[in-house]
Image (tube, rainbow, N blue to C red; front, side, top):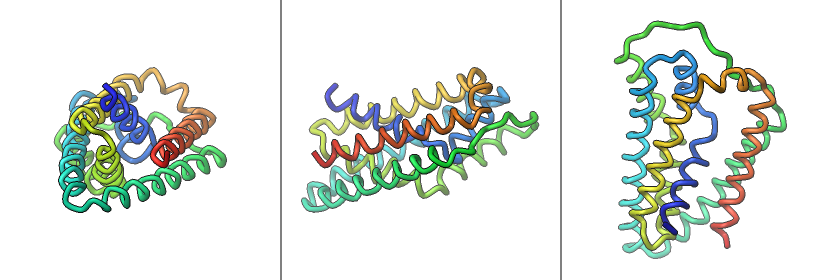
Length: 197
């Protein structure tokens, strides 16, 4: 559990940032269209990338001992930068998500679009493969850390996809996005400081 929960909460905090993938899930959740296939596609994609990161970094950490330290400090820099981006977004404000008019697209086209958004986004590799993979090397039980991270992803996407209909009045307000961005920034900085310590 000492490895599971850090993986779980790290995964959720990284996914919280509103990017193209989350906005896609949120919009389809607001429309109540293809929610389950979308949630499963996002969650399984993240789980595959998390496993790749943990397996690769575990082997690499044993083969090249200094690599883990370099990646840890790289992760710290990335987390501080990521937190700064969210802090600036919270400061500037102006973001809001409005429910779009219902658009009828095929499930196949919807999932292909989602896969493109997921795998053509360089941030997904930074978050799952590089960052979670490098942080997992800090834990004795990397498997538990990876399972926690994968379940964090499943939890987040299920809540986002199916809970979004409840959030539509809230996220029509730009102030809600500012609060969310501020929380994400603080979370990223706390994780970065814990890595340094």
